[in-house]
Amino acid sequence: MKTISGAKMKRFFFDYKAKEDLLLDYRGQDFTTARSACEFAQEIVQNLKHSLDTDWSGWSVEVHTADGEKYFSFPVGCELSAL
Image (cartoon, rainbow, N blue to C red):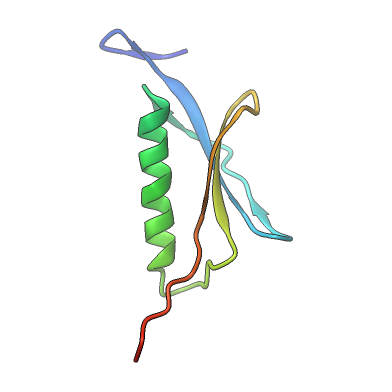
């Protein structure tokens, strides 16, 4: 486990999952806390919600560690606005 300024780092992976599709994060990101990983996942979800390239509704971002321990799952969902 890596350390930064004495704080232990833990690697989290952010997979994108839909009913019949899965995009795996093979690299992951290091964070000192699960809360930081949670905030990062929420930023990913917000970016996907506002993506103009792809419709990410029905997808979720699943956060887990290298040993497979699942921490969070955030649905991307779709937001419709009135025209």
